[in-house]
Amino acid sequence: MDACYSIHVYGMINDSYCKTEGYRKVPYHYYEPGKDECNEYLLHEHAPHGGHRFITEKRVFAKWAEKHRIIFTHPNWTVS
Image 1: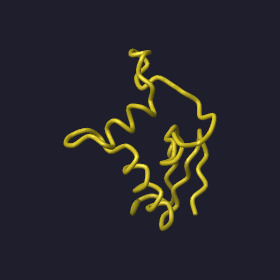
Image 2: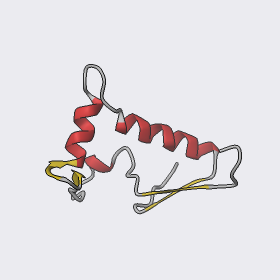
Image 3: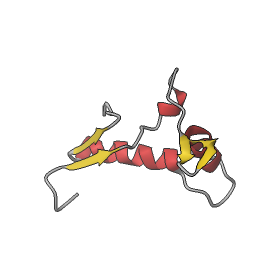
C-alpha cells in the first residue's frame, strides 16, 4: 500500500456476499465440486481453532479501502 498509487483486487467477494439473496453458489475449489464456497467460509469463520477467517479478512480489506485507494472488481464492492 505504501509503494503503489492504487491496488486492484479481482475476484474477492465482500464480507456480506453470502448473506445476500440470490447469491451465486460456486464450488470452494474447482476440483471439489461438492463444497459450496459460502458454506466453507462460514465453517472456517466459526471454527473453534485453526481455519482461515475469510469473512474477517474481507472486513479488514474493506477497512483498508476506507483509507487507501483499493479498487475491487469482479465483483465490484461499494466501500463506505
